[in-house]
Image 1 (cartoon, rainbow, N blue to C red):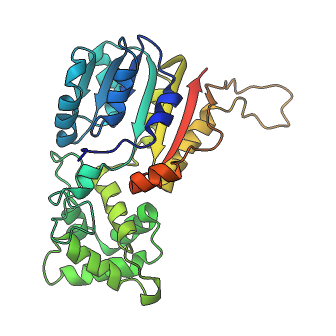
Image 2 (tube, rainbow, N blue to C red):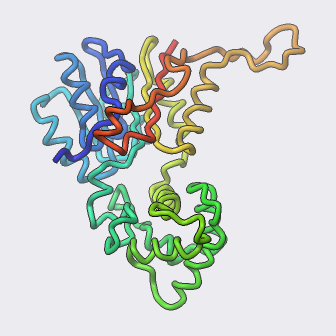
Image 3 (cartoon, rainbow, N blue to C red):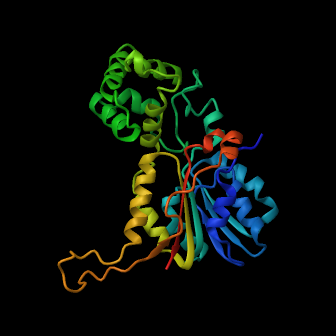
Length: 308
């Protein structure tokens, strides 16, 4: 079984519009499905990749071994792109890809605790297991108000307060340590008529985002990477939930807008110039065929823009 099935693969390649001899950045390498396809697309292409997950980097090294000398991988957050590009001696890129999806391997690994379906899994959820903060730490040490805010803001959970109250009440009798324990507490905090087989999904998403700082500095990073593109360079960004998609959409809107002066001004005084041309007016989504083959592609949205 594949480590991870790349989502919207042909659409990403089309969006990147690979140039012969170009330098491309894959900020979220995962199992290297997209990276492999980028390297295969042209024998002179160079790829620089990052991922916080040591398992992902190890898998990517194996998968990309046939392209030795044409790629470099770094175990670090894609938000550290500036230091990575400096290390590689690269000023500007011909394109970059950010795929914010959690990998199939991470979800299915019983030791990682990403899925509420893995009942006995420890509450970990760290993409980078070198970091100290775990899901167990969040669940057992954050205050009721902090938990409620995370569930509301990062999970868009309507019953955030009652779920947080349940957790704080339960942990007074002992630490909450497994995905199954947490799932049961989430379910108890949701009125019966609103419960479903996946009612814990939003809370697990919220805790994962908190543990990994997934939204911290995301908009600034997207803007910064776009500004490291050469004219004609392409940005491809895959999002999987509304929070990150909203941030990416706003960043692209800002960079594709020229003058922001009030309409009453006779001439522009802000000097703002358009920096990108959106290639996708609406995000690209997976086909019914792809969703049938890979259900995790259902929530994917691909946005593509070209540097002016």
